[in-house]
Image (tube, rainbow, N blue to C red):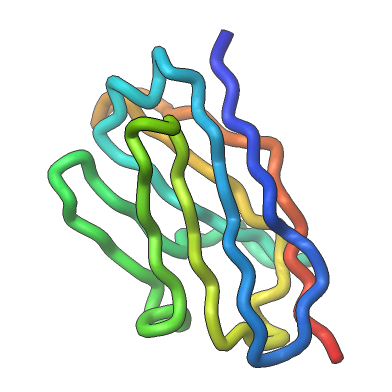
Length: 118
């Protein structure tokens, strides 16, 4: 059974930090070609925040460059998103995504809510 389970969301003040985690089923994680974090705010489309290929290439949305970092721990089948200097506009539901091929749809987690407010 494919599972992506996110955690780490919550309420944080502007300027604060959060680290999101996504534990991925081993059968999926071991075959990944790309892992990523996406977010969707109310009334907006889902957007890419950060992605990382199995070859180590990372890509960030311009709005989070220098503040967010995507990483993975293969021993724990886990993908992380370290978020620093959070802004109110970063508030959204954050989704973990894993692709095992470049041509087929990947797998999504259930999402974790991030709220940035004073």
